[in-house]
Length: 387
Image 1 (cartoon, rainbow, N blue to C red):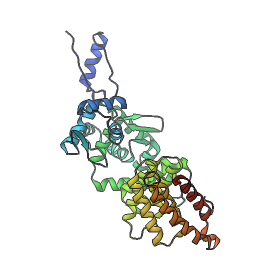
Image 2 (tube, rainbow, N blue to C red):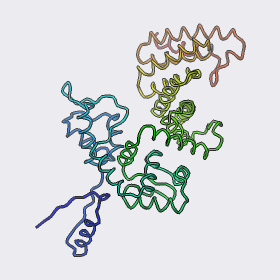
Image 3 (cartoon, rainbow, N blue to C red):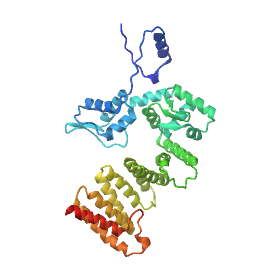
Image 4 (cartoon, rainbow, N blue to C red):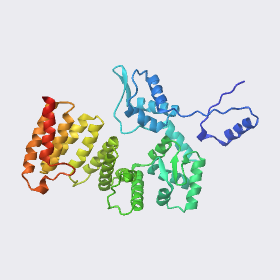
């Protein structure tokens, strides 16, 4: 008789563990560990499930893989939730997904995780909650700072989380949730107000560890730290700090040539600005996101952002920035409508001549030659191409 049994390694009960040990001692069993599917196999799985002829688009595949980590059971459960919620539906002979901010946690997974957390002591359960708000991965020092435990006590609690197969040790100073879905399930069990309070506590702790919170961080190497600050203060509803750090993170991501990250951080900064009674001048922020959108091929969004930045610059009578944005829009339209490019360059030329007649300080544009020379160069290339 051949008996095939399957189980999840993180949910082994004491009874099952003893039975497996008995089989192993008697040499009656053979264990086959099933690895998670790599991204290309998840792609194949999705094409088979939905009978797709074309590959699944990256904007759906990537968040799905990040959340499920290639676990086929998790993939199936997440897809069921999407279909049931009407966020994934069949139309025009194909499957279509609505635009979503994030994927939802399947109720079956949520319930399973919460049942396991009930086995923990209250202190360990609270620590797990703090870790979930910090993120998928968390540093020992930060967790100790926000939890307020002595090192020995904190280690004891973390060992309980590791033993429960909820958390894994990545290094002496860093830990992570065993599964992204585990972290999400614990996080979603919190009330919105609870999440806000904890995010603000964590943001304040990160600021304290970074030193003077009012000193701008300018090194691109500090991007992860600034991105964390932006995320936590945004989720905390501290809109001024969310705007400040998100804008910094977007500018840093630009220096790292990470346009998608630029778009993400700028979107967060602009949302934060909407909550402020007196937001700062935002033309530069719209321009930053617009240029990043152009880089990743999001023409409509890029055009909208650059046009908005131009409108703000004109309203503020900021002529050097207005001139730069006219050049940006000319460059954007070059691959779509060369006549529109010419229109923007002619407007830029008119403005550049005005700047050339102004005082030296007013016509100085960072990292550019004089506006008139730069515009004539662009316009000359345009004439050369149109013949």
